[in-house]
Length: 378
Image (cartoon, rainbow, N blue to C red; front, side):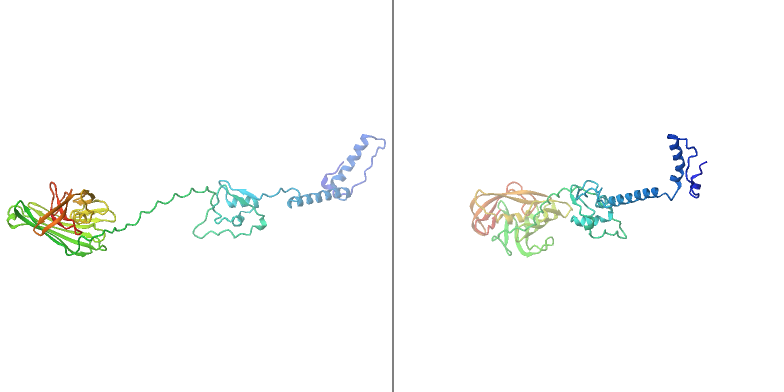
């Protein structure tokens, strides 16, 4: 009987003999194999079996070493990679180098300033791993943990910035017609009756409260009815206009109107830089550049290049409205007044509103034809 395998290794194998020499052929061979089987499986002193096992082990070791060193089986390593949507440098470092920590060095090798921002479509160079000696990966701060950014599409270029509005520049208006000290006194007549007097006085140059950096003419006009007329229609009007010396435009108009049963006190302030006005009753609104009040408009008209047939238009303000004031030069005339005889231009301003001379119907103004353009008759 054949012994179990675990006991065969501890017994001395006996030589194999066929007891029946008459047995031949396949039967003898079969018996011989049956006798040798226990020796092949369990005997450690069989030199042939030991040699076979040693050769197999050496062959496996050589082949494994060659595989690891890539001398036989490794394909040539890629030298570039085109970034696709969703790539990160850490993912690329793992794919080609097996180490995510090499992504800062890979960024440095490709001159990428921010390793957390890469652009889809860019081709990266993949240097050998031994050449990747870039700076170490940035350490997260105690207060913020940086997250790895995904590849992003290049943003569209920024639209060009809108040009800035030019800075406000005060205009320069040449003035040789009037200055401080001019005082004009007019008689107000109704047919042959002297109904009152009106005075137009450029008193001084001041810094108006509403525009303290702008030297301005302080122009004061007064209209008073005569004592006899006071019994029927008393007039006490006063207007103060602050007119910019350099630009000949209005800053403020203060009005105190009292005509019969009508009276009104009003102040209007003009913001020439922002083209707005503000009334003392709280109303505000837009105006036009270089707007004039109804009093300053007369002084500005004296500086226009007057010739017969000419027409001029500029913005004027009355109450809470700004409108174009049209001035027509009707011709030249000789005018005699108590102050003397003067060669004059006859002007027709299309003026409506409250003021020293509140126009109802047509209004004519005669100004001298010399450089002073002094008004002598209205």
